Structure formats: C-alpha cells, structure tokens
Image 1: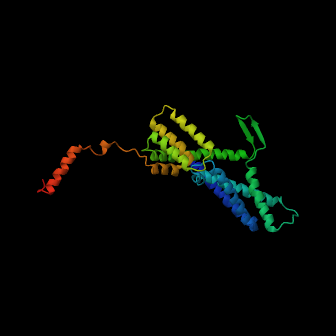
Image 2 (image 1 turned 45 degrees about the vertical axis):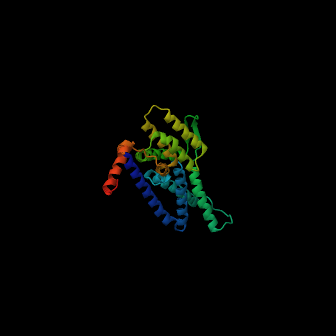
Image 3 (image 1 turned 180 degrees about the vertical axis):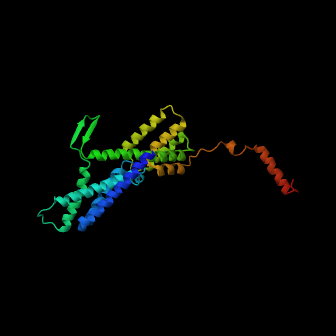
Length: 277
C-alpha cells in the first residue's frame, strides 16, 4: 500500500515536471500560439475528467482530485498538446483555404483536442474472442492506466466507504433499511435509470437470500445503495427518516404503578395545602 502511494506520488511529480518542461518549450518555440496550447490542454483535461468522473457515480469529484486521477488528467492534456505540436510542425492544415487567422487557429485547436482524444482511444486490431479479447492500439496505454487508477482509487476509497456505511447505518435495523431507507433513496433520486434500479434490486435480493448475519446484510445492502446514490443522499435519508433504534422503555426509566403515582400526587397536594381534606 505504501509502495503504491510512493509510486503514484513519483508519477505525479514526473507528469508535473513534464508539463512544466512542455510549457516552457512552447513558450520559446511558439510564443504566438501559447493561448492555443492552453485551450487544447484545458480541453484534454475536461474530456478526461468527464470520462473519469463517469466511472464513479457516487463521488466523481474525489476521484478527479485524487493523485491517480490527477496523473490521468495531465496525461490526456499533454497528449492533446502533442497533437497540436504535430499539426504546427508538419503543417498538416496549411494550404489556401480562404479562412481567417482566427478560423485557422480554431480549426487547429479542434483537430488537436478532439483528434488526439479519439486517437488515444482507438485500436487498429482486435485479437481473441468475445470472452478474451485484446485490443492493439494506442488505447491499450490508457486502458492500462485506467486499470491502475481503478485499483488505487478503490484502495483509497474503500476505507472511507467502510467508515461512512458503519457510521450512517449504525443505529438502523436491517428491516428499516429494506422497508424505508432503500425505497426512499430511490424515490428522491430523479436520474436513476430503470436498468440501475433493477440491478440494485437484484443485488439486494441476493444479499437478503444469503446466510450472513443481519448486521452484515445491512451493511452490504447499504453499500450497494451508497455506491448508487452517494454518501450525502444516504445520510440525509437516514437522518430525515429518524430511524435510530431506541432502547427499550425499561432501559430509559423504570415503570411506575399508576395507583402509586396518584397517591404520591395526593400526598404532595396535602403538603402544599394542609387545610385541605
């Protein structure tokens, strides 16, 4: 775990150093196209952030801001900048087009950002069958990087998910979760697709049919809902429904005999009004 953290930390520093070197090189080689490179780099960051955030629906921003996500964003930004560099050096878009300077620069930016993004996700050959298929192409690099990011992010987020689930559902019974929390979370979310609902229902029924304890089932089911709706929605649902398990009545205060209570009230009244009979 610590070794992987060091590796990603070193990778982040390396990518940042490369970004700095590329930026300085662009400043001296293409001083009049710095803005174009900034736009292309920003487009690469935006496209990759959307792609990466869609993989973690419960909390996409934490993935984008993580060290692995940061490496992925910068890598995609550098690839798009390299695409613009190739276009400018080799003059791939030069020629008599009749376009104004701003139109040509806009075209170069679009070609570099969109072209680099799609080229890095393309494959020219697929080997194997449907069950075991190997793509040969530039997308192999990003695919391996995404696999590394998924593993690293899962390790980082697993401990937080465990803490969140146990804290949120600590005083909620498994029955209340199934009958109240889960339906309530699904109803208040407006953009959950039918396929996601059916998949969640299947997972919850599988958990319910298992031989695990009630507590284990509760936390396992809560994790499924957590992954779909996120921490804030699940916590708000539990808080608003007020599902904390209350202790039994005899644990809070001892039961009092109503006759004894009445006699005690009469005795107190007689003490306050001695002349009353």
